Image 1 (cartoon, rainbow, N blue to C red):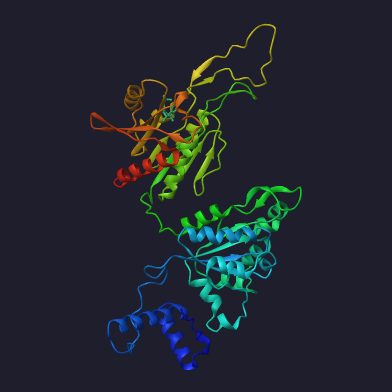
Image 2 (image 1 turned 135 degrees about the vertical axis):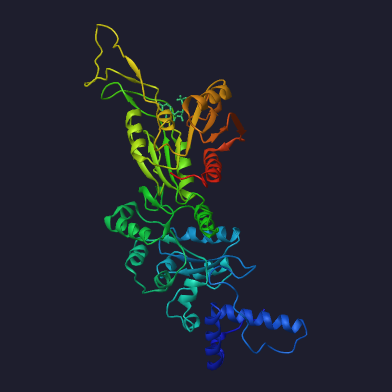
Length: 474
Ligand code: C5P
């Protein structure tokens, strides 16, 4: 196919094209494509000439033209990880995305514009003052004629410039001129990543709404250096880009307050010993993340676990059952309360103030007493009882009978029952098989769900809650 150089057109036509493009919310390049497509279609249909009046604008301010692939502007920064950006181009294209690359001056020390063009099948951009692309403000086009901007590798210098709003080269001018989402894949030496200036800049960029992926921990390109600073793998970055391009999910729990308990509790024997259980907290944390993603205002009260706090969730860390009950009561009122914690049933009455010593006189006598039942306490509240109270039943035998009995005994509305006998691998594992028991008047309705990941169980449970919670409020 012949390529057309707009630059060579007569000035009056260029002005007309710019105005027409602006009216239709398109770049000049896209406008010309639309005109040519319309002309070709009219010719095929036997009509004589170009329409004299501009065609009505396509109903889009953002997003792709119908039938086109979502477009990504990929800014390649100057670091050794730039070589992985070439693979990233392929990964993005494999996912059905159209990619246009911009290389900073430093990036060209590591990869060539020719390689990026060949892999993207598109011209590659390097220069802010390139007459071929700047006659119609090409940096604005690269900033806006896309649905997402990905910066990989995002160097410490590039992020510092972004955080400060610099625009002294093509990459930074695009990043300043864009109103599209930005995904950064930082890559640098661990000392640079941990430097206070970089930490400040990254924090600022996150506050500005930029999304980051990585960096990962591992070996550095420099000999004998390791730590956090490796760029995320191209597949991880491409998947994150795809995720950001998906239409926003419905948020059916917007305006609802959800309380979740998770993890084990630790019941002290003395200052260094405690009674615990094998709960990992994964299921409760997954529910908290799913409820947050569904728009809820989530408070997660967690016993000691080895998990990161879910983003956007208020997390209270506690040790014992009594601390957990206190935090639960402080979090009321809520619309939904989900008790996924594996609360210790007993605690030691005579908790040692000092470390218990081995004595010749025999074994220490540990007297146990019952812990407060948090679920039953909240489910039986007269005032401020949450409209929907959900408990868990983790059983190693007679699962359904025990779960039904628990539903009645605890006074909750639903029970999520799961078999935690060691053979199932549920305790500490990533998968779960659950049955949802719900009170329907005097009857108990039982739904058995297939084996799912704990994340999938969380999403399914939150969907059920959303369907029920529509009519409830604290
Ligand atoms: O009685 P059991 O421990 O089997 O009950 C499990 C359910 O009760 C779970 O939802 C758990 O979070 C909750 N529970 C509680 N406080 C306790 C014991 C259990 O909230 N002390």
